[in-house]
Length: 301
Image 1 (cartoon, one colour):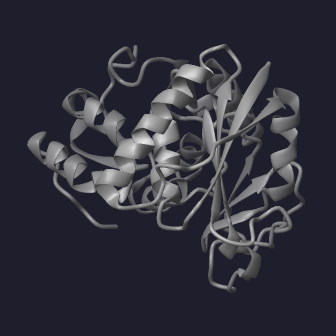
Image 2 (cartoon, one colour):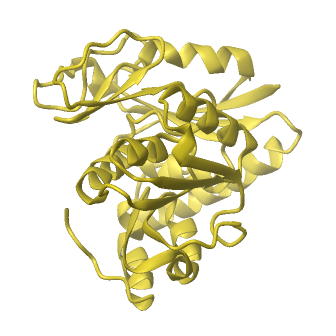
């Protein structure tokens, strides 16, 4: 299969807005290449182990790359994106209306392998690390939970901030014997973490058949597949699992969290906990308001 890479060079102030715009218009994935990464050296206390290559980074600003299937619909999609860029400039005063979008054809097999050069072990916390299957790694302490991952084409390497936040939240709230539902499991990383943290049963759902396959492979590689059930389903509404869980985790976009909100209580115990992430700052209050309407209370870990 071939993909079309849409490449935009923009400012630090506008890059998240443009990336979100691409996702809204159906991009299967985005990559951010930030010029500030050239001078970045991780401190000993951060969650980064090792330093990735930086030769590909721009000298200024941020390069946003979005990937669309080469299925004949791109022309209409880009037309809609350009119209929204004009509207975005009008509402945010960011100079994006005349942004140039460069197109490149990418073969799936090239894309699937090239990113591995930039995926290094990630220290989530003092007691949890994520390690690519092709990297060697030695435990820093005896009680460390090491999650080995090969996300393939599925979302969830553990390096994204929203994934890290979910992992850190799960560390605080998962108790031995808990049941967990992972909505939009992607690579299965949150389900695997929950199982390693003591959950007795995890039910993971994702609409993408490729993600389901990858999640199953990763759960087997981490020796937790007997506690994780993975289904190709449309979020919670079509799930065959009617058992109420102690924890529901959903690392999704804001509009998906909002759509899920009315249905979550049907799958969550009365004293259960909901973990949501993947929400941009501009959507934070909207998500909070919707969850409060559904009688959820905010908590801090």
